[in-house]
Amino acid sequence: MIAENFKEITKSLPPQATLIAVSKKQPDEGIEEALCVGHRVYGENRVQEACERWKERRQQYGDDLELHLIGPLQSNKAAEAVAIFDVIHTLDRPKIAKALAKEMQKQERDLPCFIQVNIGEEDQKSGVMPADLHDFYEYCSEECGLNIIGLMCIPPIDEPAALYFALLKKMAARLGVPSLSMGMSGDYEKAVALGATHIRVGSALFGARG
Ligand SMILES: *Cc1c(COP(=O)(O)O)cnc(C)c1O
Image 1: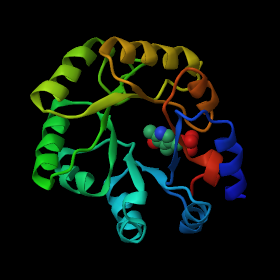
Image 2: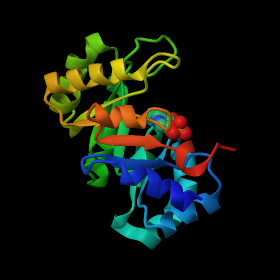
Image 3: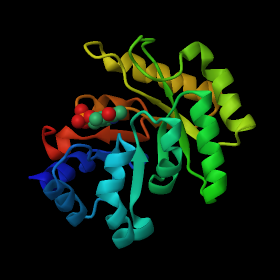
Image 4: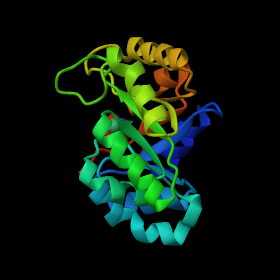
């Protein structure tokens, strides 16, 4: 069934859209099935869980495997995050930017990063506020030397996502960054239509999380 889900979703994707299979909290059999059909791009939202699940598989699949951090990061986990992940989607404050930059230098790894934008300006959500985006982008790229490739957002639930996707796209264009990490199981088609380059899909591929 998972194999069919992959086929169904990938067949409708344009070439610029990368499907990140969100494997957080999914049973191992599901991951094995996805690896079996040849999928190599996965997303995890916790550093610890990512290490447990992917460290050995990393040896097995090598550089073929691409792991994306899509959850909040604490600065004391920066070293582990830089070691296991290939792309960071959740850069949202100076302390994290600094910690990541320092670790990347130390480990001689240069991970592409997305800045997470709190697109709905919600109190409980992570992400940089739209008004602070420009300054934060300059801080990350110029002061810290991070490779910022784009913006990421999670729109408010129970509101039409398309509006927020379009807004994120506009913000990225204004900054001059090419990539857009937006769209999940419920709204990835809309996100792709609005220019998403990275969609983060979990339950539509693997089923509901345990
Ligand atoms: C869990 C998660 C997803 C995947 O959600 P689904 O609705 O299962 O597709 C995508 N993005 C982020 C940031 C997540 O935490």
